[in-house]
Length: 227
Image (cartoon, rainbow, N blue to C red; front, side):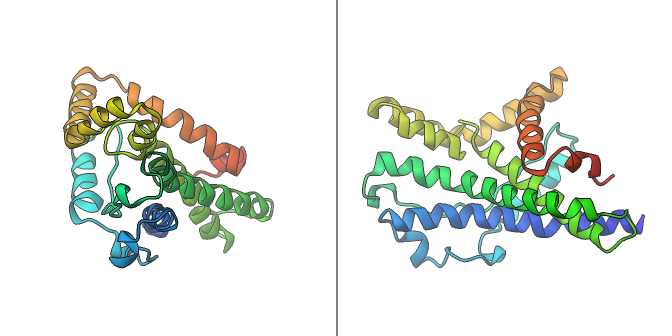
């Protein structure tokens, strides 16, 4: 029981770093493309406390766990971006939006590389290498999951802004107006999945997460999976 609690604690650093690097990447690329809003508000900061949201980071995920939702997600405080201040608003919106998931995939790739390098020396759960591999495992899995989830083209997720940047102007504007209904769309999906017992969305998310994670960490990644 104590070892299980210890492994749960080891999840915390990867989670905090994943959401922090995700938001900082958005703000950094926006800053490089002409918008200094995030910089002036002190959000280009790797301190997780600058990015955590009470409801989105804690209360909402806890409610999903309590009600046994088929998947759990949350969010940090979005880094403010003034797209009209960007050098090329429509094109740069794609780069700014892609920066978050892209940064998570880079972290997952780096963690996967270290996992591959260290795993041959692993001697079992009683060794000092075990917590290191657990942390690397969660870095790969959590960053990959966060990237895949955010690429779903449902406003206000990053995927919706990437798609909006690719759509023709009038159609893009109409599509982005759905952002205010984004949370209701997610809640409706969860309710439908719960009522129908169809876990299609879970499989749609899980398959790319597993495949990408295994690509980064090798087949040993899920052989090692903490239980």
